[in-house]
Image (cartoon, rainbow, N blue to C red):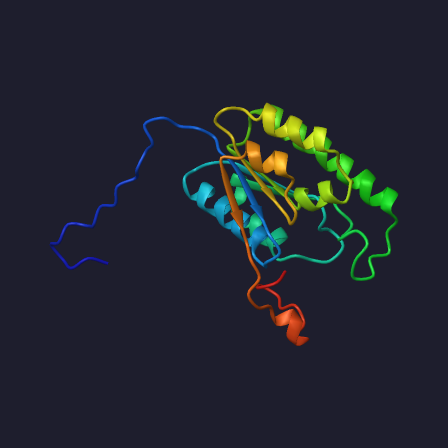
Length: 193
């Protein structure tokens, strides 16, 4: 609120001279890769942009972002196509099911990319899917290379492939310094999922 008679504070909205869709890779062993990508999605929605999020590995345990994204209305959509993290934490699904789901996610990503309906496409955990051979390097490279010039493409997950890193405009590595999990503290809603 402003004092009576005082004009409201104005905040400039900066506009780049040349608009360019960026390819951003968020990788590393630390916690916060998906969280960073979701923050970018929230920021994009604040600028009136439309966002699509496709989760390659998540889908077997509830994640708060599923309902959180719904609160953004028609500005954002999320697709959780996975069956959890392949081969860890007692995940019961066989490799072939994980691969089939990841292949469905690649197909969906191609459709969303080509639709022209989105300003940002987040491919959450695609780096993990590539490392585990659930998707092929050629498939991911094709998505990066076919990205429309104005679309922002965000790729998250550990172990980003060197060729993907080379093509990216921005690469951030999240490094674990300390994690509550290592102290046998269970994952906490709203922070970890």
